[in-house]
Structures are given as C-alpha cells and as structure tokens.
Length: 181
Image 1 (cartoon, rainbow, N blue to C red):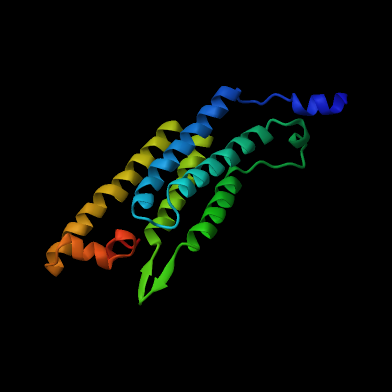
Image 2: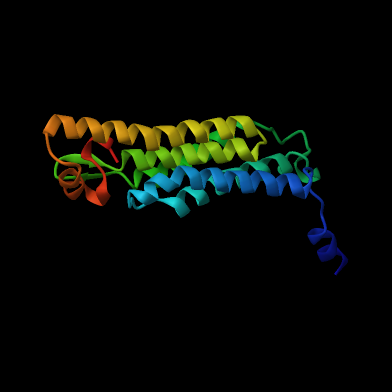
C-alpha cells in the first residue's frame, strides 16, 4: 500500500499551477485557431484544434518531467529534445493528412490540415513554456485564417462578377474554392 501512496503522491518538477497554465494556454490558443475552421463548417474545427494543441502541450510537459525522473537518470539514457518535435509533427501530420480530399478535381482541406499542424506547434510551444512564441504563432495564424479569407473572397467576387451569395452557395461549407480549405 505504501508503494501505491508513493506512486500517486509523486511531485512534479514544474509546479502544478505552471503545468495547468501551460495546458490551459495551449487549449485556448488551439481553440482560437480552430474557430475559423468551425465557422467554415470544416470537419476539423474548434474541438479538434483544441485537442491537438492540448495533446502537444501535454507531450511537452511529460518530456520535461521525464528528464527529471530518477529512472531516466542513467548514462544509458540520452535526452534529445528534437525527438519530441519529430514525434508531435509526425502525429499531427497523420491527422492533418486525413482532412485533405480531392473532390471534382479540386484539392480541399489543405487549410484545415495546415491549421492542425500550427495548433500542434502552438501547443508544443505553450507546453515548453515558450508563451510569447505560442501567442505570436496563434495571432499570426488567426490573422491568416480570418483576414486572408476575406481578401480571397473579395478577389473571387471581382474575378467572377458573381454575388457573394452565389459564391457561398457553390462552395462547400460556405468556403470559397480559392481558399484551399
């Protein structure tokens, strides 16, 4: 019984408040990145981006905590932080690739996949405590998703001479084909 009590009372290197703040930031930033995808009625929206960012942050915190655990202190254990980036990138790329489709000769889902990738990177930065980097990436990503869409939509209106209602009716999920999305 003492072994179980010790197992569940083990403290972490980072204070739990810091861990909670990092995970909360990652979740919130992922939500910001997924919001536009949700409004465009894309398959990977608000919740998906939040979960990806939270998972990436959790992997970062786990990695930080692992490096301080006694069991990993031997000479035979080698720490390589780039492996964390590679693992998260590969996992998110697998998910993002599943959102990319070819319909009627047009590629769709690229923007959603790219947003998922950015959510993973943002979560990783938040999980590692790189707050300003995570916030900056989220801000730039949100600008690209929200403002550039408006520019693309306006350009599509001018090029076709059609009304915005006609273009929205033709685009899946209310999304213009030009957005890649």
